[in-house]
Image 1 (cartoon, helix red, strand yellow):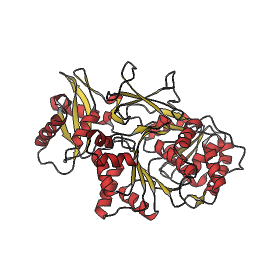
Image 2 (tube, helix red, strand yellow):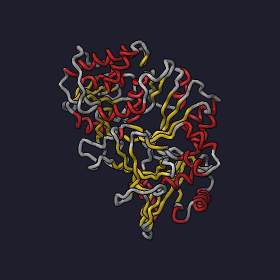
Image 3 (cartoon, one colour):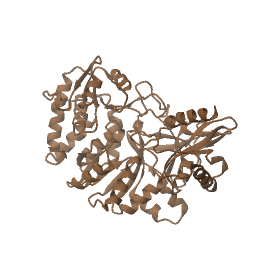
Image 4 (cartoon, rainbow, N blue to C red):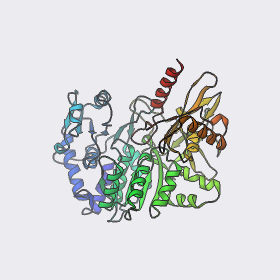
Length: 494
């Protein structure tokens, strides 16, 4: 089975149900088939997209699937050089680009650039599943982006194991407000269509626009990344709104501070909150902290249950998950290590190589640990571990401690070189308001961490920033911040 079959099933069973904008599911399928006919005659190997999310994305995705071609949404925020290099890797290709992006994509051998209103059309021919459904270039937070390969079996396995066919009510609407090149932008197309849910698109996120669109379109389901949720809550609180139509709000893509989740539970008590943890290479979600988990945790007096609000929940039933040490041994509950996963939805494959081992296990490069009941807690990327005097320190643990201080709005902790210890933790914070005395605040926050953790985990320095570098899906860009701090330290010491 391939993704085009999922749309065909829904269009056959509920052709008149609204799918996207003014299109019904029957019309969406016919539009995708027509574009697929045009793509099939273009002599290309890939179908690219370079722009903000729009109603063109689902059409193009299912058209590519129908034509048996990989869909490749690219990050329009890349530099011209990086974007053109990525486009050259997928030639020959038809690339649909927005008005502001077309010139950036022009003049590359093997790349035919079209506007969203210029989609090719042709007679619908016999469809057949392609070998690859999607290529997604990873965010590259730790180096050169890799092209992750997602095949039909990976995507369909995820959908069929997590969504009921036509399980959505006709009044349900899913808001898509994440970038099209993020795995959540792809998985939302798949799951919303198979459920029969209407898709509403927000091309460019602002908290005000998000709230306005949720209200105007009576959106019932939405997904946000950590950097979005706090801003949305600020708008809701300022306006005194509660978004009564909203029923289900999932979040993921990066670490979500527990205080933000607690605030969401207070401001949106009628909404089911879901923390979804997944990766590009796993076709989206592999672990879920469900609505009842959230409610149980916030109401709990037992510390272990309360702490689960900071977890990403338990693995999906169709996914196997292990925590391993550096030697590859499986660790018991409570012991931190690297997260390995296995399952039909797990690809672990790139254009350049396959990362899974002989047993099908994929090393996520994320660190974490499981509690006694199987709840997964993340400790950050394996490359982010701070090695202080031979001891491994988790930046996530220190960040969580700092976020419990009322002055700290955002924080990134990382290791910087130190002549005595090799590395020491340094915290960069965004304060809630103006700081009169940064030296005094540094001492106060160091004491705050020391009381909750211990001396070795206390930041050697605390620096104040107006903003911190993150990807647009909320992941901390530690390498960018580390470079800035090293330059500052060198200048200070010289």
